[in-house]
Length: 152
Image 1 (cartoon, rainbow, N blue to C red):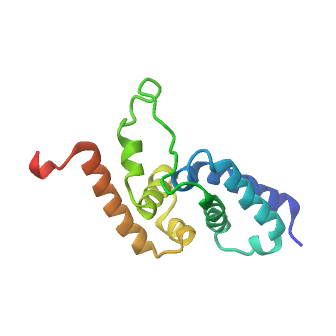
Image 2: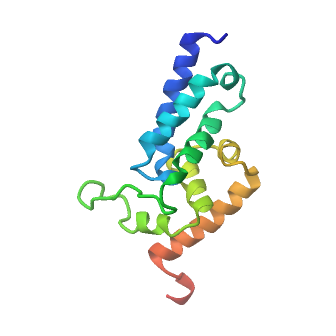
């Protein structure tokens, strides 16, 4: 039997992390339903969830699987030029141009500040594969946003 206060705390932290992480994988519109599905799964399997080394990563995978009923390119948040001037306006379209794995790695590591290990476990890949997807994704982002510097 799980300690209800500790489990509630785990779920609150999971919801906070999922709310930040999921738009890069399933899109803004699908995020609330994916979170609800993941938290419902966690509640149903609470005795197992508390034994996981990285329950947040596992619940991320549950949520992404639940969100697979959305289009392949997620509806990322739009950037209003006047509200966030430090954000490059071409970032969202450039992120949408990445492969799903590259986009998720870039989003989780740089936007959500997850470690390579946490990202690897959540995505079911190795930490070195996370590094590879990050390198390729950042190269593609750089090219999409500022162009090919070798020819410019």
